[in-house]
Length: 303
Image 1 (cartoon, rainbow, N blue to C red):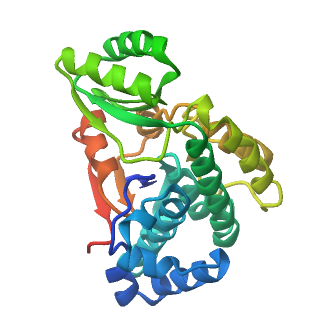
Image 2: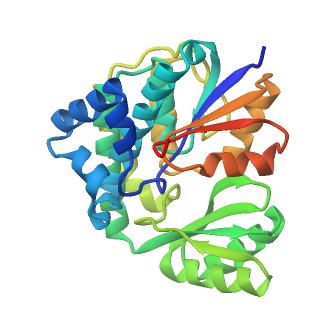
C-alpha cells in the first residue's frame, strides 16, 4: 500500500471564486466558511467567492482565505475518498500552509488556527507597509549563482534567499532597491525572473515586528502534540512539544522556507504518494522538480 502525505499551499494561491464549487457541493466545507465569518468578524466567504481581488490579495485577508479554503478542500477529499485522511502518515505546508497542516494533524483547532492566522496576516501586512519591499522567484540558476546575486544585490539593502523551493527555483526577498538589483543581475545571467505579488519581504528580518505579535497571538492558543509528524519549514524536522511548535512558528516568519528539504524529509521517511490540498497546484509543480517519479494528486477548489 502507498504511504501517503498531505501538503498544503501558502500565500499566492488565492483567486476569486476560491472554494465556491466545493462549498456548494460539500456541506462540511460550506460550514467552515460560515464558522470563519463568525470568528473573523467579516464576510470571508463573499471575498473568496466574489472578491474584489484587491482586498482578497491583501496579506491580512489572503492568509485566512487560503487557510479556510484548504481545509474546505480537505473536507471534500474526506467526503469523496473515505479513509484516505486516516491513512495519511505525514504532513507539511508551505509557509502559511504549515498552520493548515497542524490543524489537519490535530495540533490545534480550526478556531485557534484561524485566529492565529488572522493575527499573522495582519502583523505581516503591517511590517510590509512599514518597509517597502518584495520578493522575486529566480528560475534556472544554481544555488551558488543565486547566492552570488544575493551577495552583490545586498549591497543596496537587505536581501535574503527566502524560499528554497526546488532545484532551479529560489526566491529572494528584500527591500525594493535590492530586489530590483537582483532581478537585473539574474536576467543578465539568463535566468527567468518572476516578481511575486506579495506585500513585502516575507521570511527575512524585515518581518521582525511581526514575529513578536505572532508570539502574542500564539500564547493563548491551545496546542497539542500532532497525531502525525508535521514537517517544519524552518528546519525540515517534525516537532512534538506544543511549546516548541509555537517557537518554530514564530521563527518561521523571519526564517527561510526550506521546502525542498521538507519534501526530501518525507521521502526519506518512506512517503511514496503526495496529495496537494488547497487552491492552486504550485506544490505539485515543485514536486516534479524534486522527485519527478513520485505521484502527487491535486485536490483543489476547481473540482
